[in-house]
Image (tube, rainbow, N blue to C red; front, side):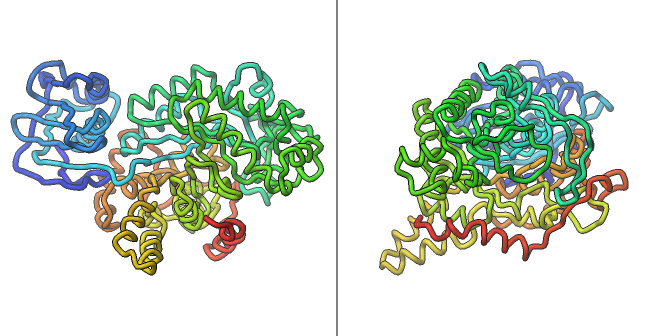
Length: 562
């Protein structure tokens, strides 16, 4: 039993089928070059339980090698009746090749225990493949609904299976603080728990009257980071600041602007923000230092989105800061704060990762922008010289509804079908052409093309976001994410010129793989009766209304020079 060579998601750049194949059995050896012992151990642990092929070390059989003539994440997989040769530009490239190898075997081999004796035949052929983008990310919000460590690790396995390589972990928000910070015990004893949770969209004012919470210890987060690294995934942490801080202020009211109260139970944006006085700044630096100690990656997320300035207009601490720094008013406090946090991170050898609101007033040099409010902020960031991760809500927010079927659970946002996700392109529409045209008018056409290519190169890739206001469990996350995340994976991995009809033809077999992996994906036929949430009504939005909102939200940014 084997699967056809082209039947892979995300689709490889080159797949050349051939006659025959290689048969795996209990005696098949695995020959891994030096530096590939971790990939080899992972492959043995993954294939062995379901196939009985535990791949003892030895020559022949499956051969893993690093080939530095290939790009870092590139791989070549050659299969004939004598064995399997897998070369990668690095251990990452080899790892992606092993994920392709898994898809060339029947779905039953993805299970955790053996259902059949096989035989297991890998179809002959050659695959040469490399990703289009270096940032192929998923954002998981564990603040609105806490996800236990085991569920996070399971999601890591699923995104690794689709060759995604970044997990952006949204650790804090108004509705919950999810990490232990030394010297700040109330962040977890108070800030990690809320008395109830809103059911459905906020205009319905429904609550479940059931406490919710949880947090990760330092060792929990170290485990997540290490587990992800073994699967060639970088975890980028985010602690949202200076807004979305009601949970922290509930724990330590002195950080706020005179308000004291509980962790927020409703969705939406809290008006309660940090006061940006000396103690609040020291608190933020301590939190960032702790993140630097736990997460080895270069980027540290500071959020920066949706921070209302209302409290700062009457806050003694905020007004003192405005006067001391000679700022024009409360609206300039956030850009000043972001610059200070960037300076602190730079001393730790790190860079800021923030939502596109940090562009207002000028983002710090070296900041990476998560552009979520449409293509406009992404293009603005690129023209200002910032690297960008494209994650526009109307293209890749997986909490948005999947159809107009009344059975969809808590339908919110604009319609985002599987085809809509597949149509996403991380490079903002017209960016390359617009930049080239502007330069061509300056009679520098060749230079213009180079500038345009460089501008598009600042787009690191894309990210699909899982905001969990309406995802109360891993089962619900599965339903919202899959198979749309399969389509997203192809948008950031596969070359341009993708075809949704071709993807749709490959999807049924891939859904069998998801079945074997235990994924509660949304069926192609639509929601099942038990998927609905009549107790948690939604708020579907039209595309016209959302576009109007985005224009209003980004109006100030569009007036600023890039």
